[in-house]
Length: 82
Image 1 (spheres, rainbow, N blue to C red):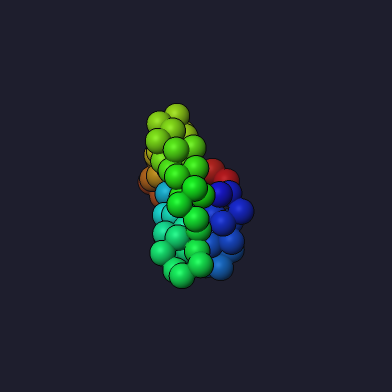
Image 2 (cartoon, rainbow, N blue to C red):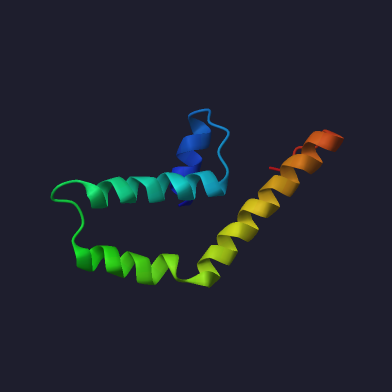
């Protein structure tokens, strides 16, 4: 996840952690839908191990929220928090 995020940022996109997550999920959806894509077992495994894991979702939401707060603070006071 962090690698995708860093690639997006390095390529000049204003990407948050949430953007990287959505990018990966969208790629997964397209892969699952194409002919010869993921098997039903793989889709089920991913669904059960990631989407239904509220701890991971809460952690991602917290990471995104902290980044947004940091961005607002740095803009307001002209600080560099990186």
